[in-house]
Amino acid sequence: MNNTLKIGLLLIVAAIVSVPSATALQDPYPLYGYVVYENGTPVGAGANVTFTNQNTGEVISDDTSASGWYMDDAGNFPSGYQDGQTITYYTVFGEYTNTTSHTIDVAAGSCNMNITVSTSSTGTDVQPPTNLQHTTGNFWVRHTWTGGAHTDSYNVSINGVWHNGTTNTYYNHTGMSAHGWSNITVAGYNATTGNTSTSISADVQIPNNPITITNTGDWGGEVGDTVSVDYDATDADSDTPTFSCSRTDLFTDFNTATGTGSWTPSSYGTTSVDFGVSDGHGSTSNYTMTITVTHFSIKLTAKKSGSEANSIVTTETGANTSFSAPTLTGGSDTDLSGDWADEDTPTGSNLWGNVGGMISMALVIGIVGIIMALLRRGMQ
Image (cartoon, rainbow, N blue to C red; front, top):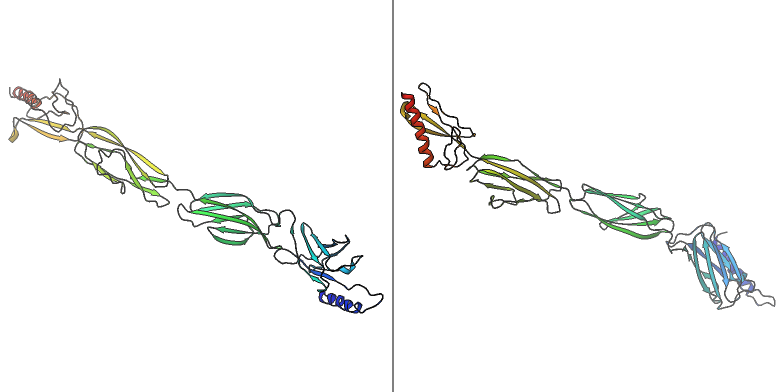
């Protein structure tokens, strides 16, 4: 028998018994409706509704049908009912409960009321997810979590965009921009009740990729040569590099945007210069350049014959050579090669020096004297 027919029969009975009679029964007062979850979905069969007349303490009850329908009659209380009495409804369906009440209105003749149940412990059946964790990589973030009780699916927000209905306990956020953020919010959802849990959230930034300085190398040359640098950098994030130089007193034209600069040494020796690059997001890379400046050698040749006879010819050479005492043989020229420093004076048979760029007058006179003595000996 359907619910409408049941109510109709009760009302017909009420009309019949309302005819005055010495033995008239009390009119029926139907108490009926559906037991539903918070989203309005009927609970189904088995929900128990207990009615208590607060004025008399008497109790009646009914169980819902498969459709979630309940129905009883206030006239079933042993003492019946009176206008204005309060009837308390206490409904139980597993862990779902509800307590509500109704005041008897004889003029209305019945009470049609849907009863909404929820879990008795928290007011919502679905529990929030927990243990939100994150793994990051190049341009991606993987979020994971542990689902709460009574959860059928999850509503996931990534940077304000919701992705609802997933049953996965993870979300892979890919295709992100360099240094991007993945701001996540996750809530559980119960499809039966239509309830959504409270949410958990986290803001996660992908890691910065390191920058590396390139086009590195040491330099070796002579006084007067120009040392030029042209550094570059590699960075998976394509960040704009900013270069640095520890000796801008030497590389006075060093450009921090391009990594280029130059220096012309005026003296010999070894110099270390630190060059670096930064990506502006915490990553740096450095290279220490070793610059070795050497002196040049002067080759002295005593000419015995020809258009340069009895003269000294000088030629710069790129390698440092030791001086050895000259010996004139036959008609050959004499090689007086050596490494000469500024204002150095030859000592013994070895003449050493640095890159000076010039030989003092005293040194030249001394060397000429030696050469002339050798020439005279060769002519005897």
